Length: 77
Image 1 (cartoon, rainbow, N blue to C red):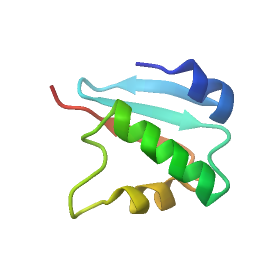
Image 2: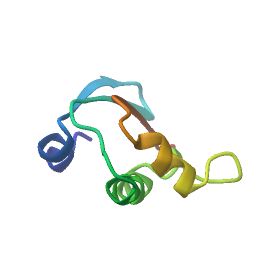
Image 3: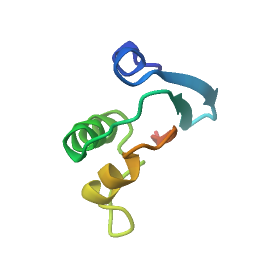
């Protein structure tokens, strides 16, 4: 599920498809909390099992995306 929008905006490149998980390398990760928040919301819509629950709320996921060079998204059937 490679997203050309993320490729253009963040330099995201799909490097592994692990069944229910996708791994991306990221050339230009978000630099501000506003960018990271927007991306976290997008990732939650695309791969809802990546984020959520008491272990990793959306705001914590957004902070973790700041300047992070890789993403791992998870979506169970």
